[in-house]
Length: 439
Image (tube, rainbow, N blue to C red):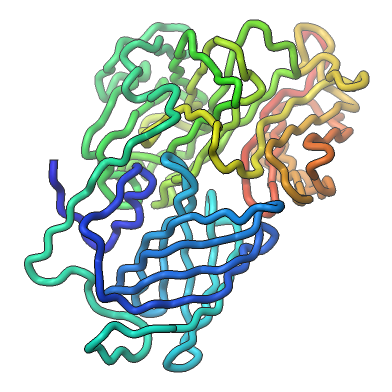
């Protein structure tokens, strides 16, 4: 099906589309880019009207990794999408300061939640024939009568399409089985596919999986996908996460992906990603599940409501997929963590409090990371209930040891939350209860 798209073409990268035909006769720009602790390299792009298409090349370890970019540059603002794989990428946004007719300086934010920093200085190295261009672009990309076509890309390496397989998953709230597709407005919660969905960022997406939790404080909706094989190469869950447009009364939800695999005897890790309605879709959410490689088991998608309400928690997963990591570039990520009573060698004693030991007093925090190619700083922010308690730098995680152990004092009973910050970017929460054993 053909569809017309306009200058927001950069967002289509999150859905695995390219634009055709390619724009020709564009100005050419080139410069250095610094991702601030995430690598330095070169950015090259062409500019037609306000449309940007090009690439970023950065050094990761001993390899040069090239990733395409697609976006727009209008006035003093530039926004683009960096495609990391067929189903994963990162949004960039920033400001542009003109130094002279040929040189500009850019600075802004990128990655999940726009918490990473980037800067660049670029030079216009070529001007399209027959054009005299001064300053930054201000006009429209589309010429009169132009029609552009979205062409779906092939998706090699996809192990499971969670949207396509959603009717065969088991959907529940905390205790009731829910039918699929569910009915919007069902106070017990529901899951369904939505086509041509307008999300909180104002854009329309071809297909999303809506998962609305039980309409009560801390309500939940859960989808269980059984008999999922994890390739020996490892696998990663990738999706965009956000809300349907108009759900601005939500107090936020926790998105969670977890696995239950017979044969896995490692530390039971958790990771919840908190998202508010902030008019931006987190397009590059990912969860590494390679610890289950070679096993077959269950993958669970869960959306947990906030503490106040769930009446407008119309949370969505954009093109959720499990992809094999064979032959794919791998990026440093937070796999998950756990809280336990103590540590014995490489084991966590009484993770998550178990059935007896409790988590009051001195406890041990365990964090695990994957694909770490250089030292990255790690920080936690601790909350008791909704109150901020403290922040702590945990040093760095590096290729030689991709895990962190940290002792914490939790002498006040109640609900606690550790917010994990990797390389300056929020990557997830760990929620638990500090209590005496047996409570």
